Length: 489
Ligand code: FRU
Image (cartoon, rainbow, N blue to C red; front, side):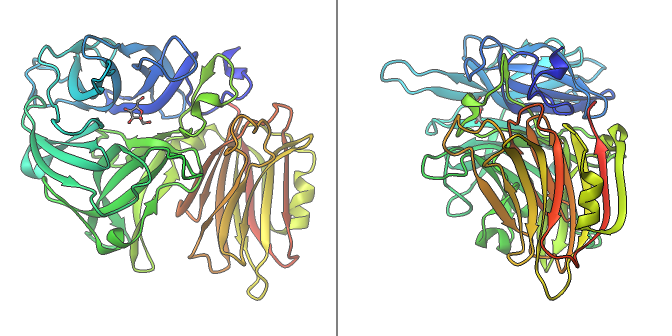
């Protein structure tokens, strides 16, 4: 059956058939999480973009619904967002609020004419099943930018208006509107700040409380940056922390000084957050496209291509005087856990013994490790291990680095950049390491120290490569706790 296909994640969303890229229009409405996505319904590579549609009650089990938006006289349907128009500011609805999608229309260029990108609306009165395009489309054009796309819209309560953040070349523009139809430019952000290693895409902007700092909150801006041949990392997502007054985003000093990456793996791109999460829930929920423009069109799946990351909660944490964005797997995933191993206070040799003979394809590892003071060692898990294959995930205490090595992870020869090892500093680990590792049929997602460092990477192991090993190079290293859960839903 489809669910058991090689490389189709057991607990990750992927389309039944054909191509998928960015998550779009994520919105919570009437008890359901909606996920729309960039979709080419007639081919397994990028092509004329539609919005596919899926819904879930728990952010883990998704039901794919019919296509939501199709190309029209203004062009293809590129990325964008969706909101609940509770006050009927658009006049599209009566008593009952409905959904409005705000997306980019992309018209291909012809001859010497460059392509045109502009922002448009569609609305739905039946919970996103069917959509009507607004007859006044497009609602926003730009007279100088060719790259003008991926509008993310939210209601800004203090100024009682809609705000749009949209990518413009290598900056973002902020607009405001009373009704989603008439837009006024508020400001532009991005010159001389952040990474400009590629075109800016798929921005997002939202406030978050700062954990551990009473009554403090900050605004977070996400900006994805496109692939550039000069950088092995390919497409990736940066973030800024600052303040926002409804018109202007002012970055904190630390965001002016350093580029900050959302994820240190290669496969978390174009992610944005859910709109309209009820206040009593209060979470900022995120999902990303689990691929990379470097090789997205070449990944070795059959009949379909593209998957999302697991859904994550974004938070801000104070960390050595700095404020950083952390990601944690949504708690809904815990309901799917089937306990397999539970160990306390053992050394790596004892843990390795307990793991020998285990065979798992889709699972979660939760580990708490204490390193001896004097000897900075290394601990590594080898997952999806089989004949000549393994993906290595570990922590090198001497370098204070988390790493993922997928050089021998399975099929890796479809692009020269795919086989690689990469690492990220985990600065605040004084001898203590907490790891959550999600492994599925074609991915690993590593959350270190409560989501302080995250690495998301695709892998293409043989379905028979299901061994799990753990090893450490210092006998004194203690595994304070190790739990493994089967997640093969
Ligand atoms: C990001 C992106 C967006 C665009 C979409 C097209 O991956 O390039 O900027 O809207 O994909 O599919």
